[in-house]
Length: 400
Image (tube, rainbow, N blue to C red; front, side, top):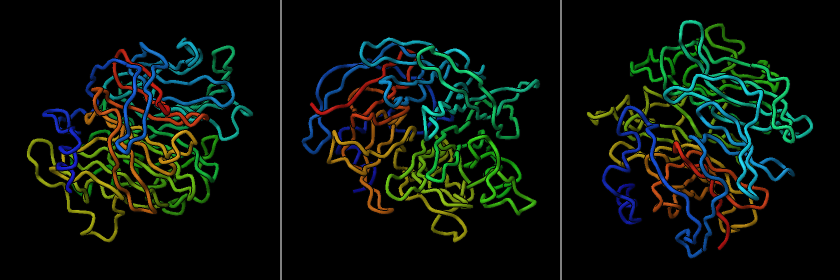
């Protein structure tokens, strides 16, 4: 069954909702309303969908805080907030950096230090502008005082250069790998010269890359290009368009990413040290409007890493955002599955994973009209979903 046939059979192929990246701007806002009711995952497993909080403005990430029972949520408009799921109370966290909140930019992802709360470092990615009005993806960290709802000692750690006159493709997911190092995605900033001179194929800049840094923002000696005078030392992988999903495989420790394509061409990738992921010289998507291929297929080049799953040109696209592996106990039949938020596709995807064989299961939340920006697993094993909307809920999936 091809991708479009699967969507039609799932009751999802509604005109105008599945063109993943059918317009140049992936992040057009969409509305939606929360609900508390029961649904199924397609295999007979009953799910309860309950509202945790409402009225958030374009939430970009949701992170459960261990032991505290609260959620740390970033809002793209420039805020970081704490959510008390017991009553839905939302409290703004002071001390966060000011941001460039235009287009796809703003306050973006958050990650906790692996030993949180000791130390209580929270790592934030965000866009910021220079004196010339150009913007770049930034990484910073601050110590979170959850009881006082404030960051102390916030410091900027890294700027993905160069600054660019663009409001798009900041990438901006951040995770800690099993090596204790910080991985950050940086988008290609929407450069359109689809050839070998594209910024994502040029290792002298940090655009279209995955960066790997120490927890204090330094360069690990083990990075792949530290001995290459024609490459930036911070780069771990390159040839990416705009990865807005990233997570760590719970068994292998590999870094997995979900990446936007142009028109279709969305990808799920396993990130390898020094790997070239092809954009835009090798890609499965096509140009907006024309449907013309971009570069060649990954299979036609032996110097690039192919995706483990892709939405090829003509498939309708997805496009993927927040991503996590399911490791909880609440849904045992999901153990080891990959959960990926869909934006224009407006559903939460669940993929079974066997090594590098990835297959999509029945879509979740496909009847809500929700653009899914992020997904996270609570210590209870319940699943949190952040909806991308100017007046958005955070919802929880639990067994019915």
